[in-house]
Length: 282
Image (cartoon, rainbow, N blue to C red; front, side):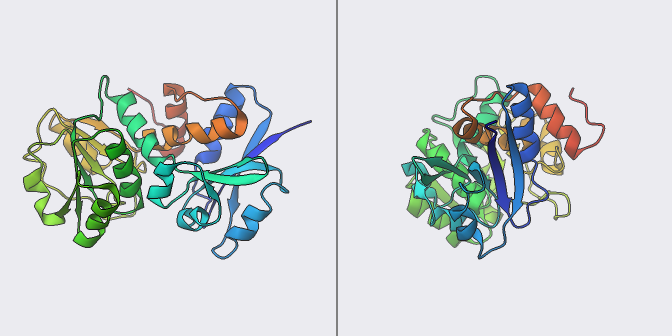
């Protein structure tokens, strides 16, 4: 009996909801397979990857803090991932391990799925934060034709690194200058952990943000952050972080299990209920 197996590695990894997502799809598509959590401490990543096939795994997802380490240990499957410098999805081909990043495409797919008719081409966008998530999202936005991507960060030098790596359509911005720069935006995105359960709230004056602008947050615990709630209450359309989590998982599942899965409302609600007990979609 050939059971297809994949997993997620991280340190820690117990919080990951990837097993719920992939387990849902395995059941839905009738695939004989499993998806596990593997807690891999720093310093043991190379050994784990070397034994991936021997353990019966077709590949793995990679979460913090291993995304940069894994980038240096596998073959890079595409130029977009090479520019990012991080890997979140590992798969085996002809006995070799390859790596790619699906975070940026997952974010963009979540916006396109939530906001009917929305396209990134020609849009003016601001990212709050310049960390790993911002890097993945910025690279995808530029590649897909965004007109301008402002990156507001408390340490301006980190935003400037993104401009150096992704080109002149990236505009570094001091954090305090962000509220005044909202007036021409089509999309505003929180890429920081601010607003996550247990973290300080994200505080920004949205007064100058156009009513037609979309506001997104990559945080998914809670499902609706105070940042998103304030945007919704002033009439902006919003996109929560759970969509990115679901859509970034699509390509990995296809690589490992041979079926391209669909992100449905039922899946969204299933994972949402695991985050907030009693959740019901409206």
